[in-house]
Every structure is written in structure tokens, then in C-alpha cells.
Length: 374
Ligand code: GUN
Ligand code: ZN
Image (tube, rainbow, N blue to C red; front, side, top):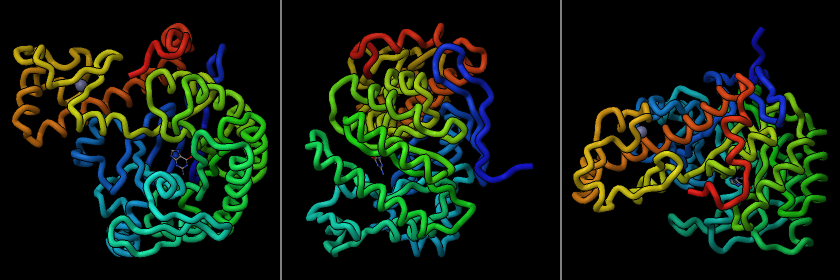
């Protein structure tokens, strides 16, 4: 018997809260822990869906905010939904726009009803409300959709964070009331800034609503070093054990290992694709730049142990040549490598958890901060 969005835990680490699980969606399964690449405008930049599949990516993100601005959800619905429109038949998740409207939009006013802002595209005033964010995501048709939330900036006064967190809860209840499609799972988002008591209260309120999954938002917004880890450690234990847990916008090696140790299952981050566009690649935990002169006659692959298409077929010298000639292929090849690297990192963690070797293989990432940053 397969109910939609079944989440089954295969293994639980004996020394930490890390778990290996399978999350079933209408477009296939997601084996967790797993990194999810970001395809903001219904494309993971520079990659075809076949190349994306080749990286090992299972679930892919897109953004309500960007797709509403262009080409608009009506057009995507007429195209048959986001999956058909972009040619990706695997699991998808859309973010609600709650975060992007706060980080990207100008002339923004937040009211109880929702957020008003000026479209950076054509200057028209746009009103995004919880109901609208759900209606848009219903039209886009991703497997997982996110609640419309208010992500307070860092730093922010406790009063401001309380107001944002309470509003996020009221907005969540409006999202739930507006959502009536069983083929899409609505995840709630815990806010609360850096305040443990606010995070705790928000998480407790959220789990009472019995949603199919929970996310932690409002992290990686400029707060110092170890705070993400502290927020995750106080929040996760309150979230239901038998539901997927998603840490939004996080994707360094160390942050992911720490979060997995606390019981997080899903991650997303623009880092692998954004860095690729700047010529940067992850190689054995380090960050290199392909335009560096030392690679000019280096005929080794980026990483001899990487199974990606780029490493299987091309040398550092060739990639550096493409970069210096501004050849478009370089963006594709570097993105393939970087996404493969992060997806594979989480897939290796999953294997370690299944064999109860998580701490012995990845415990060194739990050591002091700063030691394993990109
Ligand atoms: N992406 C990264 N952080 C957040 C957040 O706090 N809320 C939403 N909706 N998306 C995010
Ligand atoms: Zn590679």
C-alpha cells in the first residue's frame, strides 16, 4: 500500500540523530539525506534535465517568486505544469516566495494581509499573500510546496522576530486553508531567528498542525558561525520524527553534516551552481578556481575519484581553456561537477548511516567551526 508522500526511515544512527529514509512523491522517491539543486526559473542553470539526472539529483527546487514574475503561473499551467514545462519528470519542490520577496524585492510593505512589492521586471505592484502563494504553487504543480512565511533579517530585535514568527504561524494557517490538492504536500516553515525560545515555540505550534513535512527557515542569513547548528539542534527534536525535515538554503559540507547529525533530511543551496558560474569547483573538500594558471597544463580530471561526466571526460587544462575562451560549455561542465559533488556527498552520508558508520566516517566535520568551510 503506497500512500502519497510516505516517509519511511530505513536506519537510525546509534550515536546521533542522523537517519536514512525514503520520501515517496508522485514523481518518484527521494532517498535522504540528500542535497537538492536549485532551479530558480524552472532550469538548473546550464544543465539539461538529462544532465541533471546524471548528477544523482533526485528532487529539484524552483521559485514561486521568480516564476510568478516570469513567465507567470498561468502560462506554466497551460503548458501542463512545471514538470512538463521544464522537462523534468522527477520530484520537485517550489519555495513559496516568502524568502525571495524579502531578499530581492524593492518597495516592499509587509502587512497582515501579505506583502506588496514592485516587480523588478516591469515595475507593476504585486501583492503576494498566503492564499496567492498557494494558488500559484498549485498551478505550478510541484510535489512539495512551501508555506508563505516571513523571514526576519539578521540581526533583528527580538520584538521584530516575535512579530515575524507569529505572523508566519497565522499565514501558515491561511496556507493550509487555501491548499486542497492531495497530490501536493504542503510543508510548514519554522522561523524564530536566533532565539531558542522562539524557535521552540514555533516548532511546537507547527507540529500540532500535523503537516506532511517541516522546514527550518531563517538561517544562513548572515548570522555568525555556529548559530545555524545551535538553531538546528534546538528545533529538530521538536519536529515529528516520522516526517521529512528540510533545512532551507544550507549547503556547506560542515553545515550539512552537523544538520544531518541533528536529524535533518533535505537541503538546498545555490552554491554549487553559482560558484560554477564564477569558475569555482569543489575538489576533495576544497574550493579551487579553474582559471588558476597552475591548471593550464594539468591533464588530470578535476577529481579522479568523481564519477561525474565532467571528470570522466575532461581535464583541468581543457576546462581552464574553455574558461579563458569564455566558451559556454564550461558552465555546464563545472555545474555538473559541483552538483554531483554535493549530491554525492549526501549520498555517501546516507550509505554511512545505513551501515551505522556515520560518526566514524563524517564525525570530523562535527569538530570546530571554520575548519571545513568552502
Ligand atoms: N530559503 C532559505 N531560507 C528560507 C526561509 O526562511 N523561508 C523560505 N520560504 N525560503 C527560504
Ligand atoms: Zn566531477
